[in-house]
Image 1: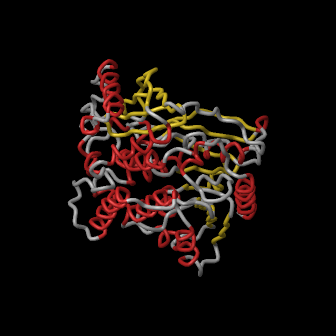
Image 2 (image 1 turned 120 degrees about the vertical axis):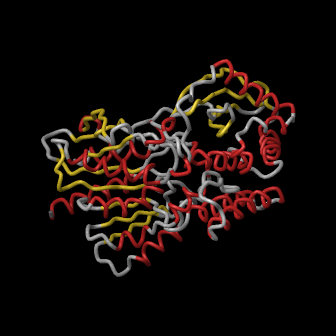
Image 3 (image 1 turned 90 degrees about the vertical axis):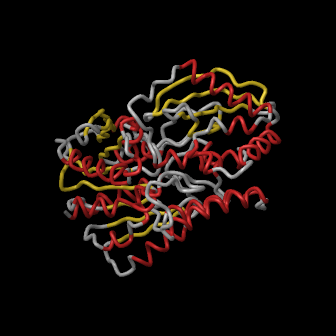
Amino acid sequence: MMNKWVWIMTILTLSFLMATPAMGEEQDKFSREELLELSENFFQYLSAGEYDLAEELFAPEVQEMLPEGALKEMWENLTSDLGPLEEAKDYRVTMEGGYQMVYARCEFEKAEFKAKLAFSTEGKIIGFQLLPSSQVEYSTPDYVEEDKIIEREVVFGIPGWELPGTLTLPQGEGPFPALLLVHGSGSNDRDETLLANKPFRDLSWGLASRGIASLRYDKRTYVHGNKIEDLSQFTVEEEVIEDALAALEFLRSQEEINPQEVFILGHSLGGQLVPEIARRDGKVAGVIILAGPTRPLSEIVVEQTEYIFSLDGQIDEKEKEWLEEIKKGRDLLKNHELREDEIVPGLGSYASYWYDLEKRDPVAEARKLSCPLLILQGERDYQVTMVDFNNWKEGLSSQDNVTFKLYPRLNHLFAAGEGKSTPGEYQNPGHVDKQVIEDIAQWIKEISQAL
């Protein structure tokens, strides 16, 4: 299993990217040669144990997030498991979601990984991941009947912020009921790809095989990250809500879709926001929440980090130091002790983003809805846990328009597994469980028939 320090490094360095897209209109000002040189230097410094020099290549915002010695601790723990880094090679420069990215193949003594570095407009590292070197090709789930599916590439959205997406339709004559898919945190593509998993493609293809259309699309931060300039004013309104509202209207306008039978599904952060999106839209036929948080994101990040640190049975002193830095950021947010234009210690991103998200109350928004709600939870999910599921149940206990479903073997991506869920589980190719597909399809069809 991948060393837990790699996962913590991924979570924390990319928490800066999670809510802050790339800045400026000159993201491509660094040449391929310059980026390759910076990347080569980074791995040379790590291999030589020159961690101070390696840390200097990180953006100041990322350096503030990392406790002293964290990079050294991560790399030494990693190489104690995998052996020394023998060579970093096959460098490749790409542009993804407004960021310049450098990929490299890292050959350790005992294993091989693919490294991914994201660079700011100033040529500083703002993201560092190690991924399984051989990415598994997506395989079609056995519950999908491909001969019953038609897909059409579409473009929609707010002028200047148009987004590409995929309209997935059943074979046959419509109009069909349809489902809009709203992503979780991060700069997600339309499939909500995470390592070897593509849960939104699973949902779209599985539902189309059962007569239900869907729309999935690339997130604004994935497509237009380089156009977003004032990050201190960037919130989930711009990141998620505006585009979801536009997507609902676009979906209703398609001739194959019954506009009275358009539903919305949100996963993770999307699950937290879809009650508000549905209320503001005012016309959705039903709302589906998959692993939707009910608590402040800063609190959930603390909980996730504690969980990952404890997987080996202990939390050592360095991990405690790191955890305290994250808790410090959480407490500063809770007490509103940061200016909106300050970066949150241990968590990253501007305080304005966190303040905006944490003032939104998804359970209160759900109580305002008269349409049916379906709330699903995987019991093995360590990212959005049973605490959140029980908060939904308690907060909506008086509502007769809500259905709850719990799946004991499923994780955050609604894929099945055994034992404690771990971040390393996402390296393995998995699919949204067939029962989830069946339950969603049946629920949509029952509501559509009653309309």
